[in-house]
Image (cartoon, rainbow, N blue to C red; front, side, top):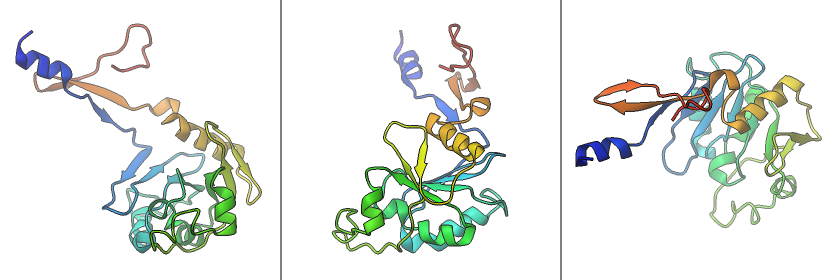
Length: 192
C-alpha cells in the first residue's frame, strides 16, 4: 500500500453527533457541558466552573440550548469544581434535581471541601443539594430528593449508553475527499 493510502486508512473517522446531543466546548478550568435533549426531559452533563455559571446559564437559554424548555436533570461525572461549579445556579434557575456519583455524594452532603478538593485548590463552589446518586457502572439513579419520572430515568440511562437508540451517531469514513457511510455487515447499526 502506498504512503498516501496508508495515511487515508489510518485517518481517524469523523463522527457527527445526533441533533439531540449538544456539546458546549468551554475554555480552560471549566468542563465541557453536554446537553442531551429528549422529549422525555433534557439532561445537562456537568455544569462548569462557578465563575462561568452566568455563561453556562446563557448557553442553556440560547436557541442551541434549551430555548425556553425545562431542564429535567443536572448529572455530574465527578465533583471537582470545574464540573459542579454551576450546579447551584442552574438548580435555582430551572428547579431541576442534581445527580452526583455515589462515592462523592457523602462529601457533597457534608460539604467537605477538602475531600472534594475545592479547598485544596482554593476554588469556590456554591453549595448545592444532592438529589440523586449515580452508582458506578449503573444506569440507574438512587435518590432521596425530588423523584425522577420513569421517562427521566430512561433519558439518563440513554445518556449512559452514549445516545438514544433512535439517534445514534453516524461515523463517516473519509475517502478521496468525499464522506460516505460504511455499515458493518454483521450489525447494520454499527458504523465502522
